[in-house]
Length: 214
Image 1: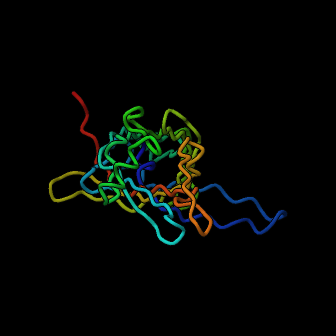
Image 2 (image 1 turned 180 degrees about the horizontal axis):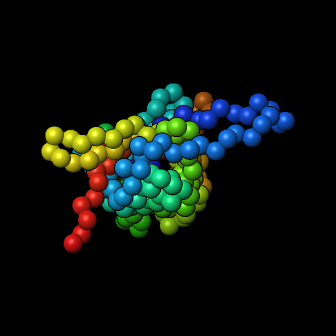
Image 3 (image 1 turned 90 degrees about the horizontal axis):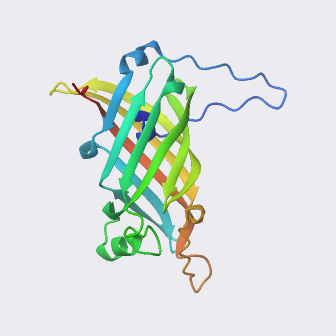
């Protein structure tokens, strides 16, 4: 996936003044982003692909996936040409409690034995603000692919003390888990569900420029 798909927290562009308001002007890419054009990979040691969901109506459970593969390309001159693919190992889920993790990889949720991978493959990227990007693509869970939109914010670009180029993005999207067959729905005595339908995916990404194969 492109670096965009790995991380991003969106700052949404201002809404038009109204139905009769002027159309928003196209965003011109920052010329400095041209230097970022190329292939990148997520650095798992400094990144987090996570989720959060309301539990028992009163608290939020957070977790992450610790194993994944990525293929990213970013075009700083024309962000619409960027692309990304991330493949996540479902059995690598870590929500901080062994019993909870066992439930998540079981048949009620990810069913990791039958569906060992979930993935995101980008379809389109647009620049929505100076440092804001929006990536649409297919999220596949339990062999069901549905479109989602990731809201992404560019954090910055540095060369670390070891000579590696790094770029950072924060990203998020919210999905309805039942759209992907995650229909576990234990009910509470007071009403409501043990696990909320809405689930937030979070991408806190540090990507490293890929070394050309030769």
